[in-house]
Image: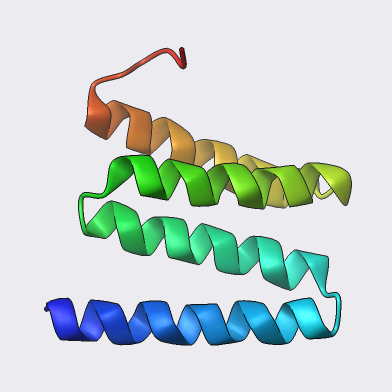
Length: 88
């Protein structure tokens, strides 16, 4: 349902703003992953990859290996959906 998806995106953006206000990098990164998942479900794979990359950048800066791994797993699945098995 497009309406529900748009509502979810709006909430995720509000959550991200709240995390940014308190400078919670892990929360921001997790929200980026969730936005990526939302876009992947919409079949907006390039947009999903952008969010996963943003989340991964923060995870790496924070040396959060488990969160980085989540980003990488989601990126791999998304590239598979794009039929792109190697990043160019």
